[in-house]
Image (cartoon, rainbow, N blue to C red; front, side, top):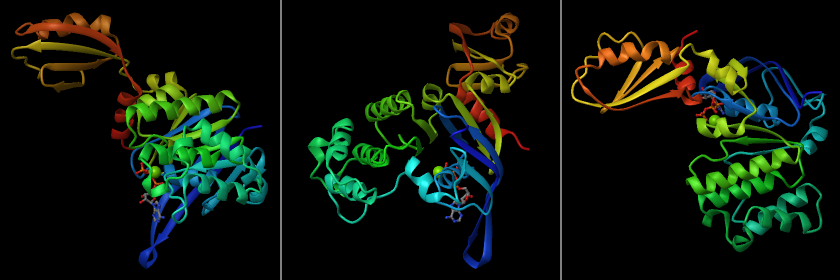
Length: 301
Ligand SMILES: Nc1ncnc2c1ncn2[C@@H]1O[C@H](COP(=O)(O)OP(=O)(O)OP(=O)(O)O)[C@@H](O)[C@H]1O
Ligand SMILES: [Mg+2]
């Protein structure tokens, strides 16, 4: 049984003056139990909408969502006990850290403090327990959001941009928390604009574009999706004439990156073209998820 299944999910927002925005157009997805699943895509692709629908916060215009085999919108009460979501949401009123967790714990019928204290400890929030949400740094707010999402010990956790706007150190800690959760058997569904994060965390990825799933697969699948598999990175000084280059390239100051299918075959040809300049260094790298992302985002379909 899959953790999540979306069948032909559509979302059409009705906005001011009956204007409509089609945010999702027939999304089909299956997410396995125990996976860390990433939803990637450019701004406005529909990631937040999809994750909100999967976590039963939004009801889709059309389509079916199954959570652990059950229709999420016919068994919402039961399903909500099994899932939780952390998004950039605010906490209510001017509650303090401890009070926030206590409030939500009570919503789940958790009466004793054990779970709350455990989460304060786990997310390094003990020293901040008496600070108000507004007084917290972005990193601690995000930790509190994560802690809150774990109160009901969910089997599936949805995270909308869990490390957005965080310094590298806190972002790293949050990624470690996510990996720990996954090791404990939790299914994690997350969105991110950080491609290196997606590479590090995700077992599989869905790439959304214009409200449709463009591709689903693991990292290798995505890297094979674009023809160009390797990058030759050359640092040079002097002038180069790039007009005759037959491959796509990026020029950043004196650093030239050429995208090729097979570097062994192309490197000599490239050297000949760069004869007029002095080559400082040259290396061959595999393409990254970021390269793939940019390539797919450019495609029209
Ligand atoms: N509450 C809303 N009312 C009307 N339109 C909305 C609403 N929320 C989102 N949209 C529209 O739906 C589309 C998808 O938005 P969504 O927020 O799901 O994208 P996203 O992939 O999460 O983007 P981002 O990367 O910027 O977070 C966009 O065109 C957006 O303007
Ligand atoms: Mg979003």
